View (cartoon, rainbow, N blue to C red):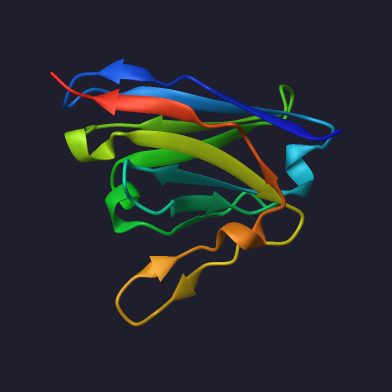
Length: 132
């Protein structure tokens, strides 16, 4: 069975940093595209960024582009999301997702987005709360 285990969420003050992790079992991350999504209360799940199986990152959300960095630890079969300069509007449940296909990022004329249906495997989510 494939399982993705997300961890690292918690309470952080505005301006602070947090690093999320997503560890896989049943698949090797170096053969998969891995994306991070988040879902804020009352909002739809949104894609943040996606790292292809060739280790190139494509940003989906402008909000993530200047503050979030993903990385991959092949030895631990883990991907990380380093989040800096956190804002209260970053409060959400964060999910990692993986798929064998390359990252698929769409553009509707005003902004980029990713489809939940493009990713076969999902972590359970980890809650990030940004508050003073």
